[in-house]
Image (cartoon, rainbow, N blue to C red; front, side):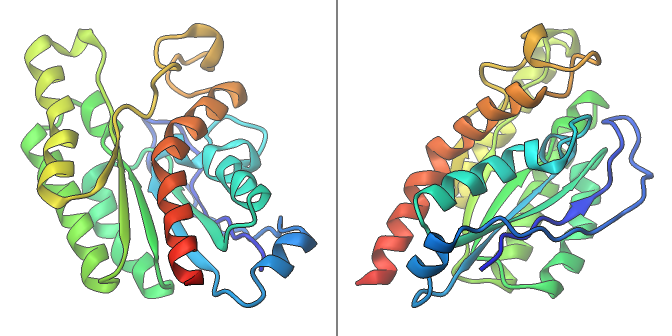
Amino acid sequence: MAAITVLHGCGDAQTSDQTVAEQTTGTTSGSRQKATAATETKTILFFGNSLTAGYGLEGTEEAFPALIQQKIDSLELPYKAVNAGLSGETTAGGKSRIDWLLKKQQVDVFVLELGANDGLRGISTNETYANLKAIIEKVRASNPDVRVVLTGMQMPPSMGQKYTEEFRQVFTRIAEEENVALVPFLLEGVGGVADLNQEDGIHPTAEGQHILAKNVWAILGPMLQEQAAASEV
């Protein structure tokens, strides 16, 4: 079965009014088709902002969801990655947009990557917390058996010590309360490293996206392998 990439916007983190487009690309090898012929392919929805959308790259094939799809294909796991990244998206925008996406398809694994734009705009951490919780609740209401991965984010010191600490705790708090898997810091190894970021100092280069993929795979990979093994029993 072909891997599906859904693109939502291509602007930067400060511009959210962008054209919404959808694109489907097939990347699955013949060996994976054979391996999954008797197994239902499950869907991983990557729901995020420009970090997920791959802003500034040559194509979405360089963004971390596509890199994770390559890893999935190499291991012949029965999953397809759907990239629902929208550049400039806030948690409030995501809370509104998720309803439309949930009507489109079944979601078996949900990777939630939102909050960075809230932090850069100094939005109340209470609002960010409430919006992320609401998104998770909506996804679970639509797909009761869904597995959720939340990607943690941190703000630079320039946002102030109190705000940066409260912001960081939003993600750990939600992970504990909602019992979801947590990527401690999506930009670990990339944030603040000039050579791994584009000229704006915010968006990762293609090389940086490979590190993001590793950070996410460290949490997501074991989950997918466990699910795949269970489905074979």
